[in-house]
Length: 548
Image 1 (cartoon, helix red, strand yellow):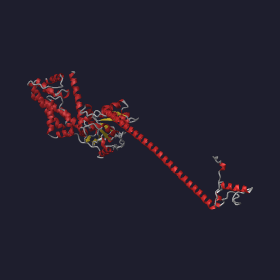
Image 2 (cartoon, one colour):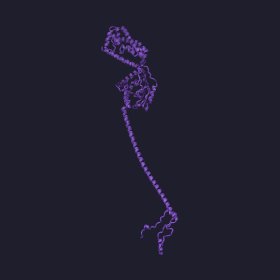
Image 3 (cartoon, helix red, strand yellow):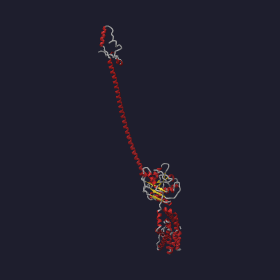
Image 4 (cartoon, helix red, strand yellow):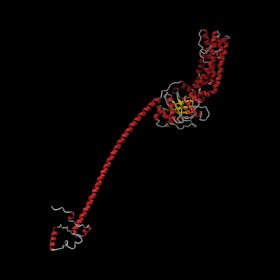
């Protein structure tokens, strides 16, 4: 076996620059142009051997100029194609890489978005559950609070304290200038909202509402409850509940006061302006009354108080005059939404109706008409007769009770009163003579003893009755016991009773003429004062005689 050829034995193609190939320089070396082959040296044999050697040796590529050019062009084309293939491959690799990157990024983003969306949904569901639970707990707490603190009672009905306050203040306003109420209100617990221009507003509202409503007011703690006497006044006169105006917590204090009032079914009086108006016009209405009406679910009643600013203005002096309370239309709290404007509009409309006016007292009108006709005369006779037989009320009280309403008719009523008194005394005397003794209440035994002493001197003893405070019926019974003749007794009784009745009647008529304007407006307060005075005087007389 022949040995593997060594690298040096491999024939090579002469390396030439492509430029030479393109220019046709295709020789094998620098001596290409000298001969067709290498120069031999030696003998001919050597030359033959050289020929054989040359024939057997690898023959080098022969290059023609056009073949070299074609070869170079092929190489350049291959290089260009290789470059194109490399660029295409690079682009394809880049696109594959980009696509893989995009897919990878898209998958990661989609996975992240899905996870985020799931987490958001879970969080929203938990938040919804928490909100539902919180709302349910809040509703339960509100319901418990409402049941514990927002309970509204039914109107308390008649109460002596409410009746006393209402009567006192109505009589007061009637006496100082007249009092009038227009409109009506539903019979239920309410928040009564009124304008505020005077300290007389609250008494006027108390006087305006029927006793079963028992309206009560919340009063400024920093003003009305700072001293003992002010606290006593508001508690006794108007039944006020304290509320804070300053220092925070004002609404909570207002609610606490409202619970005391509305919780027992009474109506709550509120002045949303917060303070008295200096000129009598409406100020800004705060929403505390509206909030309370919604919390307690009670209607709001707009009310206009007219005349109190002229009666007792802020910083001014007292000037008697008429007062009128005008009731509006009740408004349910849900109809007000979040505004007090409908309440303000109603109150302003009521105020625009004009100044306060009053009607004459109905009692005064009734008594005045009665004394102008036969009813008044018959009443005088009946009253006198009753006093001489059984009634503890003196005959002359008829003149003060009824006659004061019609001063020109007082003396006429006094004469008829004397007639009834004489007739009653004669009947009482006659019954005693027949063994029938009518009870004589509030006449202690000393009265009967003294009357017997006076009548023992004869019929003229009845004249002592005019000044000693002993009722004429006691003298009539003494006349029966002592068998005093009827005619002299009747004549002396007529003279004594007529003189007393006419004297008292003249005094009543004179006083009534002077006070008639006041009596026209406030006859009821006058009658109340008269009744209390008579009861007190009668008690003193009875006690004095009982101790003798």
